[in-house]
Image (tube, rainbow, N blue to C red):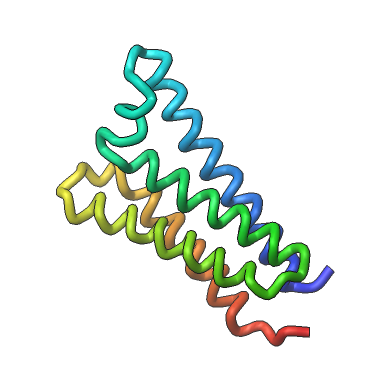
Length: 121
């Protein structure tokens, strides 16, 4: 397995894990009596996280399959996830709420840079 495909696998695994975390949070809020629209949009962090995680997951799977468009889809997901962390910081949220997103954004950027500098075979 090439390094590019290993990075694609890591992106797919991280994207799946992030999506599961976002979906579990939305499910918890809905089970506690919130409507689905409130769980996703009040504030919209859950929706943004699910969109970013979906893009990262799909991009990782495309990279794993050897498709060239996968890196661009993944980049879109990394940008959206970084935007999520940045907006949480700028909104004045407590650091306990955004520290995980900031660290995960750093890991995603490190993986993407690794993917970008790898020679395509």
